[in-house]
Structures are given as structure tokens and as C-alpha cells.
Amino acid sequence: MAQKAKNELVRMDYVAVELKNLDKSIVKAKTQARAKEFLTKLNQECKLVKENLRRLYNKAELNAKYFEHTVPIQKIKYQ
Image (tube, rainbow, N blue to C red; front, top):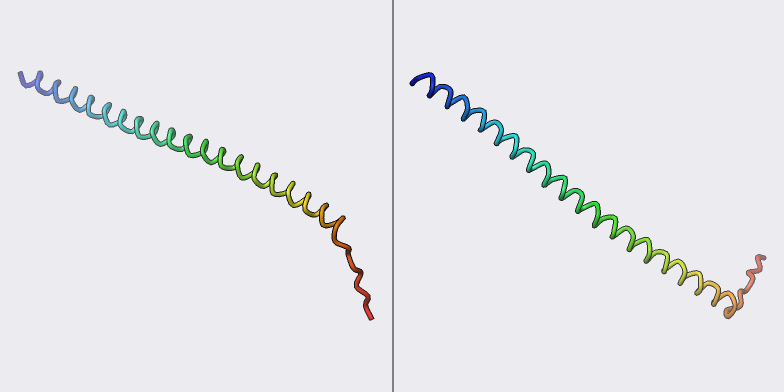
């Protein structure tokens, strides 16, 4: 009877260790999923920022061309 109880305790310890390892694996998987989700969102934000910068650059380029043709540039004479 004592051996049976001892074997049961050993088995319970083994199960407890396995559950602890499983918990660690679950936490690791959740952390990796969160990191992947964060990086995906960050990548999307970067794409939007890049697109907005491209639009602003094109707009600035058009404005520069417009002012180049409409506003006469005066040369400064140094004395």
C-alpha cells in the first residue's frame, strides 16, 4: 500500500511538472502571437506612413513647380 501511494505521488509530481511546462509553452505561444500581431500592425503603420510621405513629397514637388513658374525669382545683388 505504501509503495502504491509513493508511486501515485511520483506520478502526480510528474503530471505537475508537465502542467508547468505546458503553462510555460502556452505563455510563450501567447507572447509570440502578441509579438507577431504587434509587428504586423507596426508594418501596416509603416506602410501608411511611407504612403503619406510619398504623397506629401509629390505635393511639395508640384507646389515647387507651380511657384517656379508663377513667382519670379529676384536675384540678390551684393554690394
